[in-house]
Image (cartoon, rainbow, N blue to C red; front, side, top):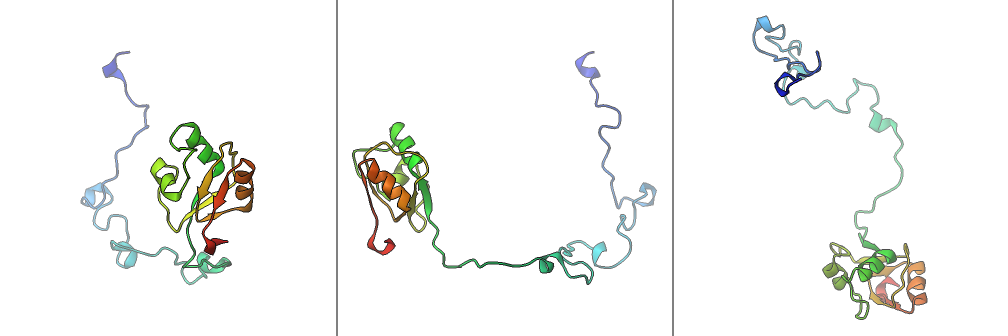
Length: 155
């Protein structure tokens, strides 16, 4: 077998049916769309319409509520902070603030603040200043010998 003899398997690829190319094509004139009506025209938007039947999106139950003014926090775990300290991107001796976390690349942006969670293990003694923190995260930092500083409003 030579390179120029390589072919796809028989029937592996078919040529695209070219519609609206004359009566000889078998899909001429109306291009398989039937005659007249919304569906025969371009720009049809019938999604969600089920011909008078109650549409699926109305049959399914709606629950809960999404608050439009809910705060979005950039979430960070203790394990992530420890990994960045180990790699030398974060300095364990200086205070860890939200700006320091952004500079080091731990979080991309503040959003409404940075929230500290307890996933992972923290070995370094740190002073962390963030907008929010879970109780278990605060305990874990204090256990490692550091402290978490939260603004007065968040407590």
